[in-house]
Amino acid sequence: MTDILDTEAIRGFRRMCEDGWLEGWHERNGGNLTYRMSDADVAAARPGFSAAPREWVEMGITAENLAGEFFVTTGSGKFLRNVALDAAANVGIVELNGTGSAYRVVWGLEGGAVPTSELPTHLMNHSIRKQVTDGANRVIYHCHATNVIALTYVLPLTARDFTRALWQSATECPVVFPEGVGVCPWMVPGGADIAMATSELMRTYQAVVWAQHGLFASGPDFDVTFGLAHTIEKSAEIYWKVLATGRPIAQTITDDALRAIARDFGVQLNEDFLD
Ligand code: 2HA
Ligand code: ZN
Image 1 (cartoon, protein in one colour):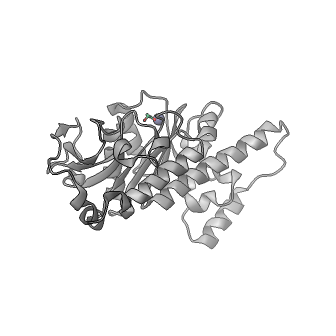
Image 2 (tube, rainbow, N blue to C red):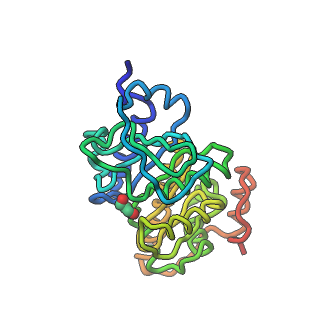
Image 3 (cartoon, rainbow, N blue to C red):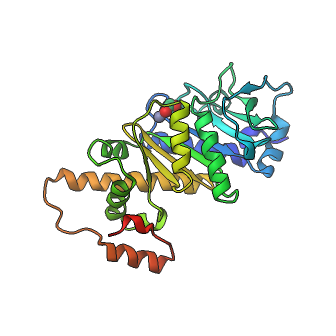
């Protein structure tokens, strides 16, 4: 029997938590990660599921298109820093019920731990991303990306302002997120309002900035999702380095240049954000 810790899903999940920690995006219990398992992932993990799953917990939301699916999730109050040391204590696998309104823990979260307080937010985002990507997206990642957060103190909180600043600060950005990034105003985390607001933006955007808080990113797998967050954060860091010189910006990537990148790389840029 394969140890559940050696399955591809859990190994990839652990690595992403560790990578985010090493980037400095997960102070204390900051940030959270969920992964919608494929049928093959579930088949590989099932032999390690608890003989007696825990009781069903109503979530206060219903994600119909996720009914019966399994998710790997970080634990509430857990430190992502510790996931690599002891995954079974810090993350778990939850199963959704037949209507998508409740979950139960089938593996991990040992010692009575529970899934991240952002689970309803993650599941609403999974629901939207599954729908708009025809099932391709499987990962939702929330991190406290330092330079992105700092930008939310100086830029107007609009998708246009953030997208343009990021597209202009690193040539790969328009290729990686041609639709731009969404921006959510400051809201209390963990609640229904921020979940609704974020998931509405996720219809359009792969990533959403949370003002004075962090970043929400989605993607088909761990590499692409982490890469998206990393690209956005790196671009924000470059933007800060430029601002920090105090010198006027002598040149940037022009809108014509952005269009040229899009043409050669075969992506459709969001025209709302071009002049
Ligand atoms: O999990 O980052 O937004 C802790 C948080 C909540
Ligand atoms: Zn957070």
